[in-house]
Length: 372
Ligand code: GLY
Image (cartoon, rainbow, N blue to C red; front, top):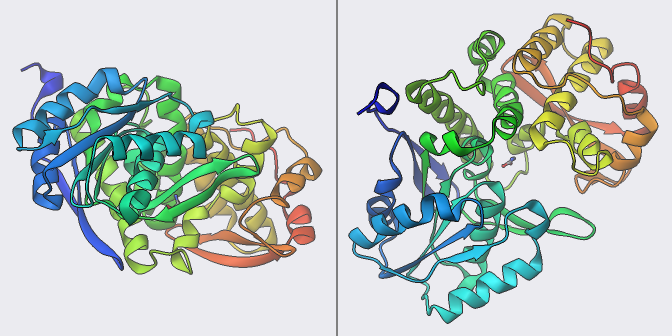
């Protein structure tokens, strides 16, 4: 065993959402345990892996072997084309037809193997098929490990916008193997750190401090540190989901940085990564909140320092009018106001209802990051 592949203890984080409890297993080299985890969490006789064209060739065979050795009859896997542009009703329909052709029953198990798009597609297919069957989420990207595989949000996009059709459907279990991150392109890995910084701002000032010193995605972190980072992020998300599964209160704070971040993402025609846009949105809102007296200048400066240390953008060249055009069309807008998540201190955020006109004047002088 090389030093790189040294054994690392697996961390298990228990999520207890209102609609169901499950374990998130975070480890290094644990894809071979997917079968045993699925067997213990969901039982069933048949299973089917849903994956996409990039991830499937890397990991599906190993995961299927693990499922077979746990006693499952493994149906022919369902593979859809990789990319957000395929997160559609059409792909969803193909997957549902595929599950029916494979004669899965409500007691059988869907295994969603891949990044955020696969988690959404596999999770929603499982939520809908026979009015709901168990799904085991096996996230292979950092974004999916620290955020989207936990908490039960599943969705597909419509022409009118992202994630407009979906369901809350908690997984039976999650298996996150940080070794899968070795095959994720560096740029995509760095991008996902935007959500890690967001979690640190919401709940863990000490982690924010670490993020200011230690880049997560430059390839220097070993498996043990990666397991620690992913497990801590899962715990933070778990605490929120346990308290508010359906986003009627606390879960809204997970949208920190997203109001402006989504607008930047849409204005760039989705050419900028989600995490980078969230990071920029987070800094813009933090600076604007400091100016408004809703948080201290020190809080805003520390957020910006962590974002900069992770090589993520701290602002945007886009103008306030252009951004507000996209904010006005965001699905989370309520009448003529938005629920803006305000980082009132490190480790504490509140939701403020802000009229669109006020939001424009709030952010217009804080769109560009401060020089380091
Ligand atoms: N990614 C935000 C949430 O799961 O609520």
